[in-house]
Length: 488
Image (cartoon, rainbow, N blue to C red; front, side, top):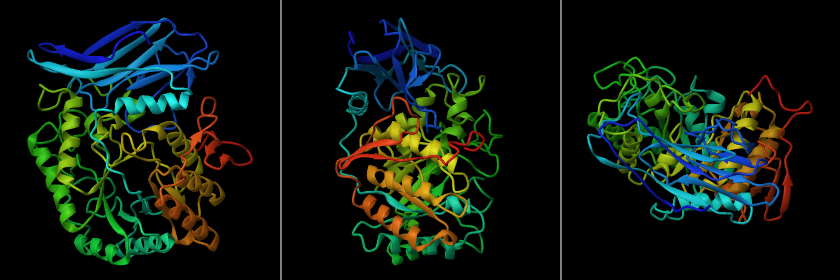
């Protein structure tokens, strides 16, 4: 592309949006790829020109006639929500600089909204995306060589219901048994349902469910005693009762406003408490929904409802979300952080692991196919550049077909990304245990040393052909009748 990279600086009294246009003809046959605001939802794909299609953070355009690929994007941790649109005559960068659903009061402040990058062809579309991700994350501090993140999580068979410390310890014993003495210790995560109030009901996060989790420090110690590393889930920006720190937008006052310093103090205290209890991994969830009142697919170009603002109107929402992520990172210290429903382009460098796709399922295979395979294929280049990619759990449950889950297990293990398994004790057999152990041990060893790459990703949203160090491997993700358009 014939233009220079550089910072977009905005000086204004008040500002909502800025648009920058580049006039550069694209081939009519071009295939275009973008990213997603937070998690992907089975929706990442190469697609022909669609001028109104919103492409968060970056885009690539591939010319099938010449085989060349190029594009543009913004560096991670920008101070605006940035997206692109692409048409035959050029492309536009849309910078959302609002505070909640209204203008940010910059009051003459000069804000570096984003640093724009152009991407030239690097050989193949895959290599170009890898190079683009490396460029957008080049200003991050070098990541230490991350240890493989592998573990157990009961969500996809328990779904937050009817489990106690005994069940958690059984999961920990199972993952240790399946790891079979591997020198890298697996995690065992206490997911949603451990605290009073019911599933996803919010904090305070200072005690467990009475009579079920009376001693969280004791639970963490017992997990360690079994040979696993304890992890804990929480929802930092929701409380069970409305209060003065709730935001003014959707949420009935129960969603905390992270522009209040007091809210960041509460979140820091939560992280320090969890660490004091002995947890070595913390998964923080739902923060994008609790800020915007919407999940990714509903955010679109508007992001949130109009007419409301956060407590501090002098900062953009992106600045406020970044401050939240930085507070969590600082308070967590050496605790492994998983971001779920976090904005990947803002969380890069501030979480160790990112749930890059929406939930897989222990009840409906179609969700695992649609969400898990798609996010692994299209966001794999972000792995070990932005964070460790987590395509979500591999279920082993009576309700889902093991022969298909086993293929997903094998692919995730080969990838070297995070591997969590959700193993219903009722579904364990010699066959499942053998496959789970093989996959877990491969993942704990870092996966396929040569890496993996989707071969048919230009034409398939859930690629079935994958290049590995030993050649091309083919996975059939569908049942005999194909994909189910009703499920998933």
